[in-house]
Length: 56
Image 1 (spheres, one colour):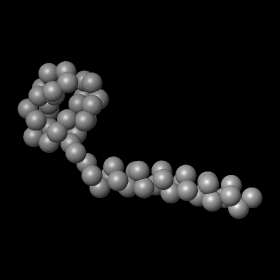
Image 2 (image 1 turned 60 degrees about the vertical axis):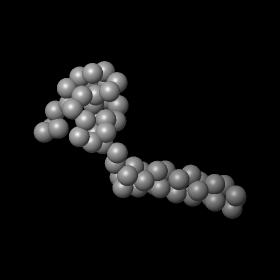
Image 3 (image 1 turned 45 degrees about the vertical axis):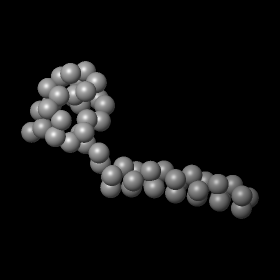
Image 4 (image 1 turned 30 degrees about the vertical axis):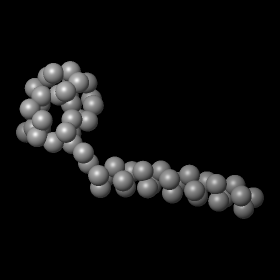
């Protein structure tokens, strides 16, 4: 019983830490065409060569 509670708590903690890490470390913005993370200040998406509109 305690093992199951500890395992669930560990899983919940891992999910919370993952979301916190993604919130703190934001490497860029999502491309609106291919939905990949594009580095900051990139004029074009390196994956699909579409123009990046940084205003939205």
